[in-house]
Structures are given as structure tokens and as C-alpha cells.
Length: 254
Length: 337
Image 1 (cartoon, each protein chain N blue to C red):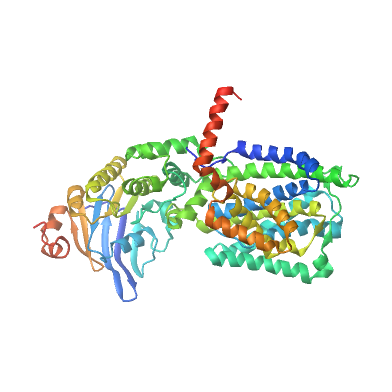
Image 2: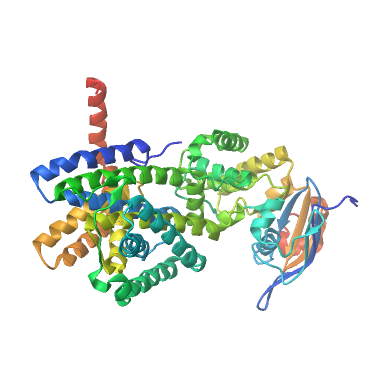
């Protein structure tokens, strides 16, 4: 067992929507540099958990501590400043500006120059340069001048993740970074994302449905079902659990 | 960075300003009386630029920009009437301060709402002010309005002695100076990190929040800047119109500002400018044809929405226009001009 202070400590977290127990008493810890995959069938509470940790939703009860500090009542913007960044299940970027400008705005936001008004974004060459470097890290440098609607869904999903990476967070929450992408392209995309994460060493929680991907990349898996954590541990432990197989894997990975 | 939008650069703003400057003597010699519309056009273009900062870049539709135009105009009117102030730059400054203050007060509530709710809150604001100008006639002169004497420009240049045409001409270039400076500032605003942040707020609000952006504060700031532009337009409108009436705060003027922006093409930086310049002539022509000129304008806007939803500047994206543009640049290369 790890003895250092966890980066993120979630204890007994609850969020009900009316009668639906979306997140029902969830507890786990995330340590520096961990790459965690969060799995579970639809409705298991994965996205709600991401929403709670990122501050998009407020929990009904329970505690979220980041670097030992209770953040359960902080709003999303304050959590971003502390170093928790998230991407979205659906591509959530500005459609009227280029990929490069989308990334540049995320960088500008981290640097606190969003309110700069009397200089064009283009003339902030340091921001543009950083955006290009970041794009190269995930192989997005080819289409930077295009609008999000002019590139493939895969590139859009990558853009969504890069905008999150641009914030240089300590904890990265990726909600289904491969949703809406063909099975063939999924591996390519997750490959680029995971290598970028590993290059930066950011602790990450990735929500993912594709078990092939999960078992190839994870060094820790959290499996959820009906708002509770079913299993939490290394891939081989989670895979060998009878109940996880019944709920999630449908016997495929027996 | 590739910007495929036509005219989204400072050079184009200067070109438009130079054309508006050169056209004035031309129109006044060919069609006397029509040149003053050009002055109205560039003044209204300032208001439309402010409107479009909210509409196209922030995603907020204001149906009440006349509130700020009216405030700017009444800042001139009331300061003349009660303290005899005639230095226009000082009056503009008063208009700016009042507009910004009103935008802060209304915006504090309004920026928390989107879509039709924001539009209606702005409309209500303008109508309340309109009601004030009409009903408090012992202060505002009611529907008779306030007569505006000739202003003093640049703090020292008293225009009282100028004849009708001479004043109109001087004032045209004076307004054009304001327009050029304000349009260039607006260009920097919409192309700055702030302007791009507004676009992210418009297209993907939750993303903006996830980037740590305080969305409502940015919306409020955009509204204040937008109001200042409309306020300046209102203040500049007063001396050329020679009269300030409650009409300047009425919903029809708010509607006209929306109309102008759509006519020119809200997706383009130059759209509201081209739209305002076209609109003033369209309105004048319609008024000369029939007393039912609103009908003509109504049909026009329906036609625009059906046949050219991107407005006049949207026509530049047609293949024919692109061919002509290519031909023009080929000729330019050939003959080096």
C-alpha cells in the first residue's frame, strides 16, 4: 500500500438524481503518475463521477480531497486552477475557430491572458508556438488551420483532449476519449493520447468502454456498476473477478 | 493562421474608411442631399459593430441596443440643455460613462440568461428608457425632443459659423475619424485572446468553464464594450440629426441595428459596417418610393434570410465572385498595380 499523500482522495461520495443512485458511496485514491481506466456498463455512474470530481456537479454527500485539501464545495473554475482538468464525452470545442486557435485559447487561459484585448491572438507567438508543440505531441499538426468540422471525428476527439492537456493539469479526467470513433481508429487515437499522457507524466482517469483498449493500456482499473465500485486494482485482478466478468465482460475475457 | 473570412484585417477597415471619405464629395455633386446618409451610415456602423461583438462573437442577441444609442444621444442633448456643454468629445465621454454604467447594471442580471430571455431583458431596458424620455417631458422635452446646437469639435473648433453644407462635410470626416479608430480597436478586440475566448463561450460554454473561464464576467465585459460603442454612436448621431428624440431609444432602432448586421452578414467582421452603409440608403430609397416603406424593408429582410442568410458579404463566397477575385489578382500580377 502506498503511504504518500494521495493526489486525489474520494471518500463515500454520493450523488442521487431523484430515485437514481448515480454515484452511491464511492471511495478511492489516486496517486501521482497513475493511469487509471474507469469502466462499467452504461448508467454505472462513470460520467457522474467525472462530473463530481471536476466540479461540474456538486455531491450530495462525501468528500473529495485534492492534494490533501477538501475541494468538494469548490466550483469548476477554481478546481481547474488547482490542477483538475477534464475533457467531454461529446466533442466540446469552438466550431467557428481553427484547431490551432482552440488549443491556443486553452493555453491563454492557463497563462491568464484571456483578458488581453488589444493584441491579436496571432501576435502572441509564444502561445501559438506552444500550441503547435502540443499538437505535435499527439500528431495533430497537419490540420491545425482547419475548423473542427473539417477534420475527422478522431482528430476532433484528440483536439478535445489536447485542450485539456494544454491546461497542464495535475489530474486529467478523460470522459470516453474514443466515443464516436470507428473500432479501427480507436487504437490509434488512444495510442496518441496515452503516449502524450505518459510523456507529460500526468495522473489520469480515463473512462473507456472498449475492453481491448482497457486491458492493453491500464495499470489500474476501477470497475463500476450501479453507482458503486465493483472492483479496483491491476488489470489481471479485475479480469479474474467473477462478478466483474458477469456485469462487464459478458464472459468474453474468461 | 489562415482566415478565410473576407476583409477581416485592418487594411480592409482603412479601405472602407477611405472609400466612405472619397464618396462624400462625389455623391454630394452627383446626387445632392444623399451624401448625408453616408454620415448616418458610418455612425450607425459603430453601433452595429458593438451589436455584433455580442451577437456573432459572444452569442448574445440584444434587442435593446437603442437603449445605449439613446443614452449617448441624450447625454449630448441634456448636457447642452442644462449645462450648456458643447464640446462634443466631453459629451461623448459622458455618453460612454452612462452607457457603460447602464450595461453594468442591466448586465449584472441579464448575462445570466441566454437566447430569448437575454434579448427580452435588453428590449425591456430600452423601452423603459424610451418611456422615461417620453413621459418626463419637463426634463427631456418629451416627443418634441431637444434641439442640438452646432458642437465644438476637438475642444477648440467651434462649428457654429459654418454653413449647412460645410458643417455636414466637416462632420462627416469627423465621424469618419471616430469610426476608423473604433473599428480598428474592435478588430483588435475580436481577434485578441479575449475575442477568441468569447467565441469559445458562444460555441461551447461548458468547455469555457472547463478551461477555468468565468463565463458571466466575460459576457458582462462584452456587453459593456458593446454598449460603449452604441453609446458613442448615439452621441455622434445627435449633432448631425440636430435633434434628439425618444425615437433614438425606441425598439425600432434596436431592430434596425439587428437588420443592418444581418444585411451585411454577421459572420464577417465587416458585415455590420457594410450593412449599416447599405441600410441607410435602402431605407431612404424605400421612403421615397412609398409611405409603406416598412413593407419594403420587411420583404427585404425575409428575402435576405431565404436567399442569402450570410448577408451581402456572403455573396463573396459565391464561385463567380471568387473567379473575379482570381482574375483581379492575375491582372494585378500582370500589370503590377
